[in-house]
Image (tube, rainbow, N blue to C red; front, side, top):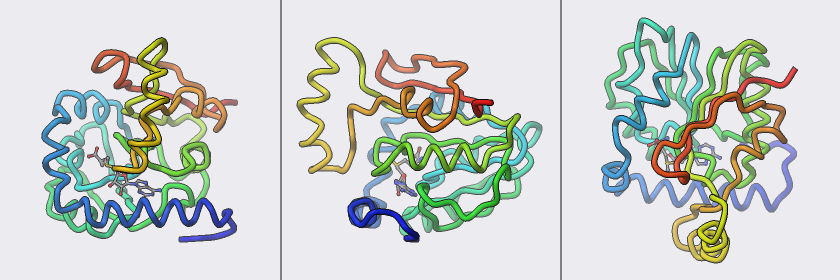
Length: 209
Ligand SMILES: C[S@@+](CC[C@H](N)C(=O)[O-])C[C@H]1O[C@@H](n2cnc3c(N)ncnc32)[C@H](O)[C@@H]1O
């Protein structure tokens, strides 16, 4: 992992990765707050050859439907998270790899679906990661995200105020404008659903022509 990215991004990525090497031990407590039905809504959108970014401890893996999904490639930059993912059952052929979302080692147009759940809140440069998703998804494929995002109004301002503290404490950006980032990355959001209030969104996007 590395390439020609600015040193600031490499440092931030390494800091985020180290956090997850430690957090892997406790992640099941956070996972308990993520409802299965939310995951099912996201994973239910996956088709064909699937790339799951930031697969974490593999909580989505048992949910892939072999009638719709041919294979899953799950990646994460944390080997501790991946080690836990390896013990998850999966009903479709599955391989797991250590990789940075911001620098994918796959050829262009390799996947029918690129999916990520609760990942782009921690990726240091979300647009860079989404550009990579855009590159590796087929022109007729889709990108599926389940993300907590910045909301409008007073609550959004509070998210802005508390974001530095959240980033400092747990490395989580609580005020990301993910729909906007998709557009900047060359992906057109075709569906945006509110999953838990306005804060947790399911976003479906396709490559911009
Ligand atoms: C909040 S966890 C979510 C894990 C899983 N997607 C889920 O829904 O339970 C975020 C995951 O993204 C991974 N991650 C964050 N930034 C990443 C990056 N730049 N490259 C690869 N993985 C990354 C972390 O290691 C962690 O496993």
